[in-house]
Image 1 (cartoon, rainbow, N blue to C red):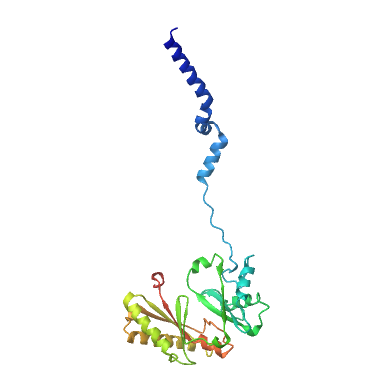
Image 2: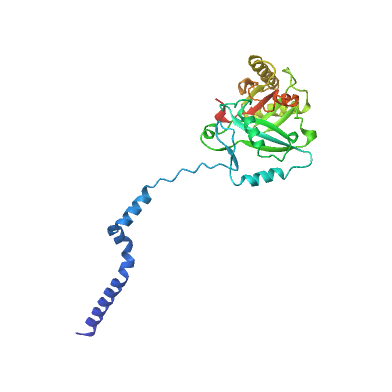
Length: 288
């Protein structure tokens, strides 16, 4: 056996030795898939598992559809502490209950918003009654989601005593409120209203956005009377915007009469807040 033959034999043996030593590591995934029943089952399960639906968990202070009772979580204490941190010697805590059209008004309340505000008020026993103001506000977005999920149903605001009387024009999230005197379709005379209507007209004439005007009243008088009064208020605003050049097809009018109070009708100040027209710029999905 010459030297060349010996060298070839040695190389073959060396290759075989290396292959035997490292093959299990190199080929493990392949033969594991063929022979490991548990691994095959595991891989099959992972491939067909559907991602879980996100859990429907309440926030710090949440509500369910048609239910005035708040649901609290541990983080509520932090929320409450944050609210009370702004309390001074004489300011007023305004608690606004939020609600959706279609939620039934509990007995003794004008709407679900007031019922929620009353329940939340119980969570602040250290604040005297004369320093609490309960309000209600209608929500218009995510209505279908709210029917099956938890949602925020209350908001908080501290008012200075001398500023409790509401302005004749007030901007809230997604809408502007214009207030009216008692039993009148003539808006309160205020330069701020004139300025707002002028800017609104110029804006929608440029953008082509549509406006919804919804008239509201206090609870004085019957339902039919108040429906018509609210509608007349909305039409009065409609006429002003037409005079300012807004095309008629960009404006719609409606009335809720006395059915959607935002403040208690038990006081004159509350009634004054309820006599209003809400001006809302419509998103495309709301136009129909």
